[in-house]
Amino acid sequence: MNRMYYPGKLKSLAYTLSQMTIKPDNAEARMMNLWQVQGKESIDILVDLIKDTFDLIELHRVDIMVTQARQEFEIL
Image (cartoon, rainbow, N blue to C red; front, side, top):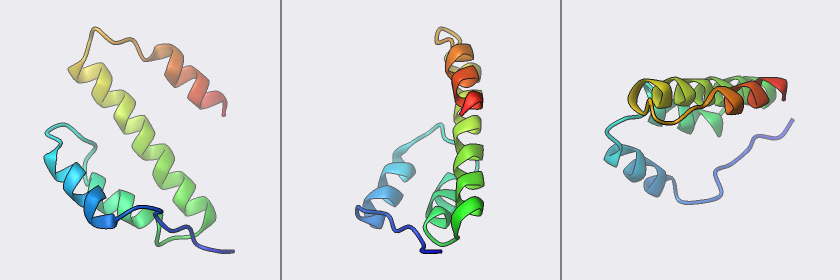
């Protein structure tokens, strides 16, 4: 199976993440790892990042309801 490669500049990704005050734990390492592992492992990492992002939205932006988005994501 072929590996995926980040289509943009990895430095830009690192910089953008460094500017974020609220982000999933180890976001940079996890996102960089997406492009280093194959298939299912990459998908698992991405799914965990998305779920962690939902959790952070619920924690820090109580005015934003993510219940429906989370349910629709779980269906996929």
